[in-house]
Length: 300
Image 1 (cartoon, rainbow, N blue to C red):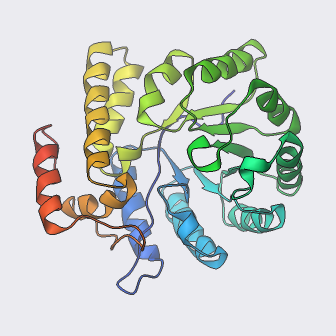
Image 2 (image 1 turned 180 degrees about the vertical axis):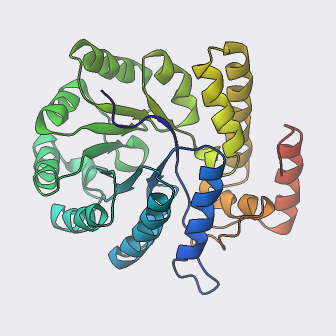
């Protein structure tokens, strides 16, 4: 049985005018997506900009997300990935103590291209044994260089990993993992990490999924999810295609996560500016992307 259901937003992190973590801005963003029927949060992942922060800042940001999520009864997964299990466990215990529903981690990065399964399993074994809340694997080969295999997946499940943010995008491996979960009736949360994977994930029985643009257009994301639940496939395809177009438009203007700051400002949700070296939209690009998004009849 899955522990999470419905849609996840993967919020960017709010900063104040001095470039510090802005807990009030985080709260505004969480309230915005919750009001528009997004049920869950996955915080401090790639879009959350965790790699731009030191560990103390990650704790401040995590507490901001968790405080806001708890006030709204929103389950929240916090990414605690680090270079060593010691650092990851410190972040994991902080997340646990502040009400996280689960934690997630990439493989220990930077040296990840050289790690073997033994290195990876040692890292996760230490984390699993150190906390009481569920531990998820954050699969992101684009940033770690690690491509998931079925032998590694089985070892992770056997070690006590209870879920995965699946950002790999390999359909064959994804289907093999889902078949393994379903065949063995596993209590495992497989959560596709992108809008691209949403349809195939739902077809294979996932109970939850993440959509990046859910933080900007949560109404459209929730409408897409409801269309599936109501077996309105024509509406689901229409909405999903629009979400894919949004994804493409954002990518055309630089880092998708970095564009969110100005787009959220246009939606009357102020969260400051992206942290350097991320670069937001200048005035010319702001007007261009707003014009393109309006052709999709979006509220911006």
